[in-house]
Each structure stands twice: as C-alpha cells, then as structure tokens.
Length: 130
View (cartoon, rainbow, N blue to C red):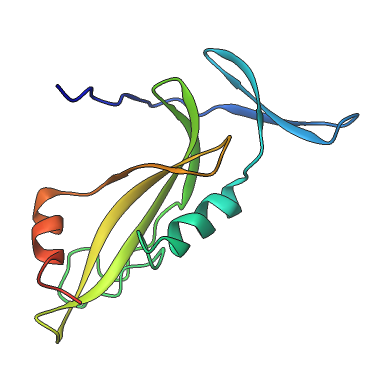
C-alpha cells in the first residue's frame, strides 16, 4: 500500500537570522532551519539529470519556447521542499525534438530529491527518446 505524498499549495515565509546567519522558514509544523537554498535545489535537479533546462526546446510541443517559474518553497508531507519546475529536452526516435515538463521536489533541509512529477504520457514518450 503506497502512501500518497501530499503537497501543500502555500508558499512559506523564509527569513535570515542576522545573529546566526542561518536561513529559517516558517512551516505549519513550526520554524525550521534550511541548509539548502533554491539555487542549490535547482543545481541538484540538474546534476541528477531529472531536468536539463528551465525552457522548452521543442518545436512541435504546445510548450515550445515556454519558460517556467523555476522554484517555489513549499511543503510536502510536512517537510520543507523546493519545488523545481523544468524540462527534459530530448529527441524522440533520435531526431524529433520534444520537451518533457517535470517538477522535482528537493528537500530544503538535506538536499535530497524527494519526488519527481511528470505525466504518464511524458514518461511513456521519454522511454523512446534520447
């Protein structure tokens, strides 16, 4: 029985503690110290190969040339995460440019990838793309 992960749609308040130079966020569960920042979350998503760009490169997709608001600080199962939006740009059958929109959730506290969201059709099409 796989437990569904719930994403809260609220944006969290982030602030820097001047005395300690720590970044803290206010979550429904209380104040948490963040060791990762949005630029590190984006870099982690790129390094793992989950996404390659914040812009769609597809000429045939309805999202051609589309860019995304790349990161949002939110919660997923009461854990502070950065929601990183991006695209995996590949070539279907080796020659047709396609872009797959993905959302990667990166932990704000330890930098691990928590979850990657993409449509079933994107997953299927990506299996025949490289």
